[in-house]
Image 1 (cartoon, one colour):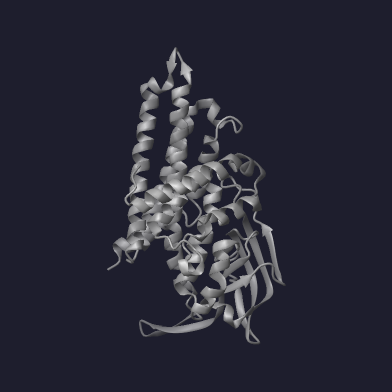
Image 2: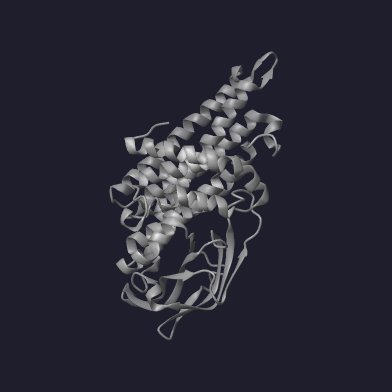
Amino acid sequence: MFDVTEKQKKTRTWAREFAESEIAPAASAMDKAGNFPRELLKSMFDAGLMGMLVPTEHGGRGAAMLEYVTAVEEVARADASAALVMSIHSSLVTALLAEFASDAMKAARLPSLASKSLGSFALTEEDPSEPTRAEPSGKGFAATGTKMYITNGTLSDLIILFAVTGEKTSEKDGKTVTRPELSALLVGAPAEGLTRKSAGTKLGLSAAPVGRLEFSGVKIPAEALVGERGAGFGMAMKALDGGRIAAAAMGVGIGQASLDAAKSYARERVTQGRPIAKFQAVQFMIAEAATRLEAARALTYQAAGMADGGGRVTEIAAQAKLFASETASFVASRCLQVHGGAGVVRDLYPVERYFRDARVLEIIEGTSEIQKLVVAGSELRG
């Protein structure tokens, strides 16, 4: 493991101490219950984890991306569900508002998001053929439609809703093309006309709340429009770049937890008169896991560093998410193998939870196949 700055080292220590004392002891029970305790969420806000990407002038930590992903990694090492709650709130909500919201909206919303109010990012449609629409209504909009698989959706106090607000035309190859106009709008929750339900029990990342959000004529004032009307798609794509880097950090955290567990078990498990850590087959699994994990960490940190430099990170963010999530699955699988039969019993060791969480990470924030399309598109463009 390496840290590239003193600030990053301090952040790692701070996040690790909190995660080990407050999150890790509750992780197994949360996973089994399939819910995220409000008390833990409050503790994460009080500690400053949820306001890491909120500028200091609005009550946050004002962290750089590299510092932030270090914290996400350490939280994921304790519990990936907690890291997911944190990363969606931070990468996709607070970071988007910090970059694109008006000064008045930042002053009104960011202090609360740094201290107590949970955010969610409602982009995915239940039925893409019938996208959520926010039709002009009075001095604002009325939103109708259904969003699905929205992390934090059932617990959030503030939703960034991406909805079609009209049509826009452009010229392409001498032809006029009409496309939906996607805008970003803030919706406070609960709200009249908004119905929120759980999306169901998940294979992994079980404690992170994932919901179905149904909007039935939800009134949204004009001042709740984030940035310019019709600019929602660009905002969403920029936010997802940061979200994918955070997801990569989650993969590194899950991988590190898996490796730590395997090394501990290999030293304590004795067969044929010696610890299994002495057997070459086990050593090879540990070596492969550790090597791939360091490569994933390096790529994740490189992506975060490029984001801090202000450059375009769409390709490297996709590369980091692709490699780190698949590495997490590989490492968790190898480390579960080290545990043998004990690894698949829920009440004995946490490695089976790491295995399930890692598998889900390959799907959320864009599947591995989507990341490959992003990377290939960037490589082949021009």
